[in-house]
Image 1 (cartoon, one colour):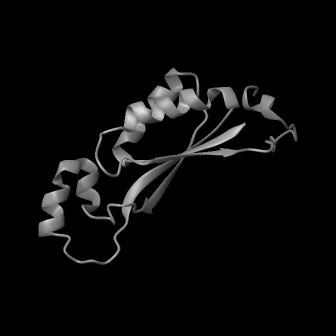
Image 2: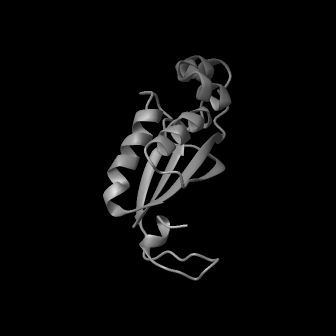
Length: 129
């Protein structure tokens, strides 16, 4: 089993959720997060809507060298090992704009999973109610 963590643009969440559902991956956790990467927060919230605005914003509005954080969404999915590449491909397909700030995907090993309600354990509980 693997945990797939994706940090993506906020406005890309609806189409990403729909793609997961359509591909048979309905289980998903979404969190609101803030962060910054190589762009150092330049562009702020407007950059999320129009990445091409970044150069103008950097020159006009974001001359302050202080650290800025951009709101993003963090998606977490637990999946069987053989589903990881399909899920990663969906995330990339639905979120790639070829601009800085498209996000990151992390794939981490999961040792075990437990269902709180019944105490059942193991990867099979991901597929059974």
